Amino acid sequence: MIDDFSLFPQLTTRQLVLRELDVTDAPLIHKLRADEVTSALIGRELSKGIEDALAFIDRIKSGIGRNECIYWVICFENTSDLIGTIGCWNFDPAAETAEIGYELLADFRGRGIMSEALPRIVRFGFEQIHLKSILAFCSEQNISSIRLLKKFGFKLTSSANDNPRQQVAGMLS
Image 1: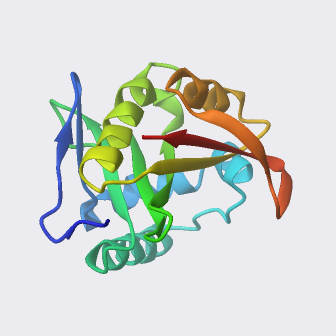
Image 2: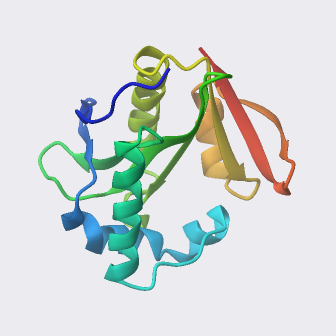
């Protein structure tokens, strides 16, 4: 099911480049992960500084090296500056499923960026990784994310067992 991600798959869309995460992204990874609104919706601790961002980058790169996840930096085609991230993890080879997640810096929300990035990653998951289904978990308060997932064919299936305020959406190939 899982490809070898040692040759990182850079992807493109009409206006975006989805590229590999790098240590030079640490300042913007910190900014992204220090966003109080997003972190509250996701339920994660805030990044406290560049050291946290570098540790996160190291964890992601190690996970990619072990084919446990794939994680892209989203940027516009004319710059390499991070505006958001998107990736897949929690691969289940037996069920041929993975979880997808994404986030954008506050200045770039509401501009259709995820409407361009999400279907590209979904296509990659089904065509390159040969997933049979993709799951997304999001807070019931994250109306924008729920709307985005529904727009691209994800079906709201249930609440997560461990968090009744978290919705589960799934998409089948």
